[in-house]
Image 1 (spheres, rainbow, N blue to C red):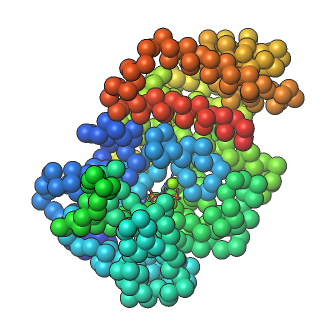
Image 2: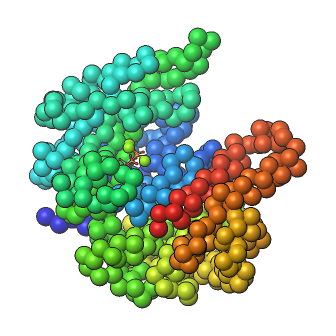
Image 3: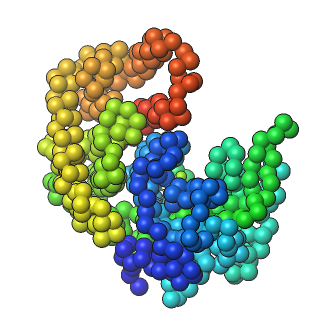
Length: 477
Ligand code: ATP
Ligand code: MG
Ligand code: MG
Ligand code: MG
């Protein structure tokens, strides 16, 4: 009963076409009219104005497979990649949407039918769990969703009630919001064995969230006496299911990276780095993480550049640069010091060019951009590496000079220190960095930041997160 990732994508869209949905192509990873958003991170982004009633379409039901990137900004999964089996920087979100058309009852029935019906995904219902919103801060428990799950045949003991953090969704501080319901799949006890040392619990390894159904039910306004939720005249539906996760389930593997969406890319990464990972060899776990990271980051970089992002020192381009350099660094950890990432671009095109024809047009150009970045980074490293020695690694202040002057990545220095058995002076590094930031702030004369457009505030935040992500990355790998 094997289904390829491409078949699953197609089956999802066909299923919802059969339920009267219009098939809509993915929008760009660079959000068209939303400067507050770093990258497209959910299927609903391109329909935001339709949900708000500001834009009319000639359909009230839609289904899509949306390119998403969650690296930087509100959702940042960058540091998870390679260490969980289910997070990617780039992934495809399958979604069905109702713009004031059907609501909870149908959304739940559709999802359950697609997942469990023998003609469709045929998942064993005894492996599935659902969650509903338990109620909180004046918003009632989602008794309707509970009832509809029972009606499709989910036994009460498989329905869990969670709080606002997981099961309440809002577009912003004001505007559409509502409870959501998630569907989890039990990968089995084998799955909880994975990554015991990682800061992810065993349950989180075992039960994977596959689908999130958002019920846009209220309009939130702010009044003198606090937030007010008014029922929307035409409640709407927004759902998102990670293609890589449902492929993991349907292909009977324990990790997204073992699905056919990733194995060819990992194989190509092995060829290009010349590093063959021994099967079932625990000592090679780190190498395997590096290969997963290269495969993941190659997809993200390829799609981002194809959608018009270029490596830069700030904003979207900075996140792209960080992704590329992290991929390159993991190639080096596997012993490959020559440019190789640009070759990964063609592997991504070969795997995904049918679903995303734009890749066929752009691959040559994308590969050139990646190669240029690889060459520039190699020069940076060459200059920086000459200056890097025991003394600079022992002194955080000197290490910070290298970071500032030569663009020497922090994680590189942390790794080098570990290899040389020298304790890296992280506290000194951070102190020097804070001093520098304080100096920059002082010379910028307060206020400038407050009046900056949201996009720039977002970008400033990203840069900070980028720094801490590198630190975690450096500490973990
Ligand atoms: P998680 O709790 O696992 O981080 P999430 O709750 O942040 O997921 P949602 O915002 O609800 O995810 O997105 C809808 C669906 O998209 C998820 O149920 C999951 O299948 C998928 N998804 C979310 N983030 C990622 C990611 N980084 N990589 C792959 N798939 C993802
Ligand atoms: Mg998440
Ligand atoms: Mg979640
Ligand atoms: Mg979720």
